[in-house]
Amino acid sequence: MTIIDTRVDLDITPLSGNIGAEIRGVDLGNLDEESVREIRRIWLDRKVVFFPGQDLDPESHQAFAAHFGELTEGHPVVPGLDGFPNVFEIDYSKARELYASYGDVSTRTQGLDWHTDVTFVERPPLGSILRAVVAPPAGGDTVFSNQQAAFEAFSPSFQAFLETLTAVHDGQKAFQSIFDKNGSGRWEGQEVPKLDPVIHPVVRTHPETGAKVLFVNPGFTSHIDGLERSESDALLGFLYNHSVKPEFTVRYHWATGDIAFWDNRATQHSVVGDFGEQHRVIQRVTLRGDVPV
Ligand SMILES: [Fe+2]
Image (tube, rainbow, N blue to C red; front, top):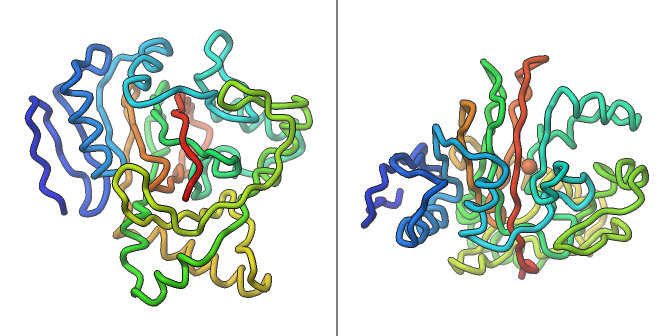
């Protein structure tokens, strides 16, 4: 584990051996430049940072996010909040009704399966900042997995093989029915006319740290290019199991007001679907990313 030291007065607690830290002693609505630099440094190292007990609203949530990058629409298919197109909200009880009305009761679109956000576009997000608007009294945790650690755990020969591969990422299975109903979507301020699949490397190089990162996810990766379908299915199944082994993960229990900020270039995440009919509402602000290479 990297030992965390800091020059500003942040109270930082690593939450597992490979990923995650809790940061206290800071008001995210009132940040100085040095704190922003320190948070970015800790975030790049820990992949996801959590800020308990904050008091943000949609406006200050966006202002906090803007310290770390350029905002985009929260989702290329599902529209944002009224008046806040860059704030993407999921009220899980409404989401169930919404997806049922589309004839799709899959939990995929609610984030309960492992995934990396929006990898089905050419430039997936750099990262996301999530605010717990209503945390359920019990359950509804989010688990994050470090995809740099997952890649580094492989043998050099297998790493070298994976680095030769590219994979197709396809948002149609999860989102085509919503897309068809809405007619189009928006991403990075532009209209998205259709949900064409895209190709990304199976191993990407992190643009800030230079680290190699495993970059396939069961939410959106459909197959690996150039392999027989049976080979692709077997390899992806193996990679999916490996990439979320407990030793690469951290599990966070939410209280209302908590903020999480994750590096979408180096992680997968999944909501634990154990909260039943309890109310759970989150809002997400998303930062523009670049083309994975
Ligand atoms: Fe997600």
